[in-house]
Length: 454
Image (cartoon, rainbow, N blue to C red):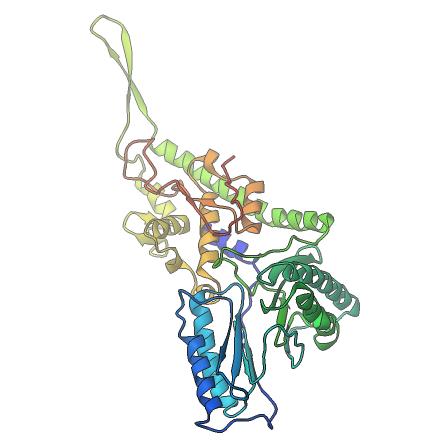
């Protein structure tokens, strides 16, 4: 049953897959160099410096200059996407350097944009200059709607979101920001903006604003997403979460711009979906708990003490009081379809058994594990198991479940065993074999809310 809850909750998380986008711009044909020239060797040294820094010291943004005398001086910089790991940044730069060598073999200036980084070198200074040309853009192939009114509504939401992102990015020292907005009551759109860190706040603002409206309303009008890159800045929006700020502590997120009424409608929809599922799970857990209690009912015997008074002694039967017909009915006549291992059957037992063995992803369909980050899958499995804990008071409330779904910065407590799991211990108050410490799903520097059972 925990698996069923996981699949249902997963539907609330936008997800999409697509091929990596990249584009190479080779400068003017008249600005070239010859092999084995001084410029050639300076450029080779610049590429070496950018790709040999090591993933432990690499930064989001860096610039270097190689050479002493014009016109053989080579200026270069790179910008990695704000949410990626240093090792991913380094790998992106290595790939970019190789691709630029193949596509722009003799050009003194070249730029390569890809999903995760931009690499730019030239025979003139590329620092402190806000450049909005050339541009590279790509639109999501999916249409937002066939109705012009719905297209216009979506575009207005995106432009408003982008306006706030411009302010956030241009006022942040590392020149990036990300956020999400809600449209049509419950659907989400995600945005990310970034400038090279050498730009002033005003130049970053101008670079981003120059093409926002053009991309959203013209170049990608009516589409479900789009991206645009220039030598000095880039931005992107999609209906799925294409970024993941769980790798860096200095993330910059803008507050939501959606109206409180829309937030309320979205929350109500989520509650309406999750509530029946959790109620069903609680009811099922209660029924199973009553059956277990009946199986283990205590037999009370009276004995006469030495002084003639009666003492009550409670004797607990160690064996399970279940007849053969009950077992056959519960196991569908010992069907192999229900059998997980020796001593257990059923989806919740399977989820709990895999969870205890630190292998919860083994019972998830490969089509989901291949398209969804493992952290998100683990989080929803955790939430599902919290809803079916043996102790009713330890189960989260509906409001808590909604909070856990909507926020990735809330620490999840590890679940206790469900009533489906038959413990070998005869003590009714035995300790949970799993630690009760909270699992932290975010390394943000902002405080993390601790959720408690109802």
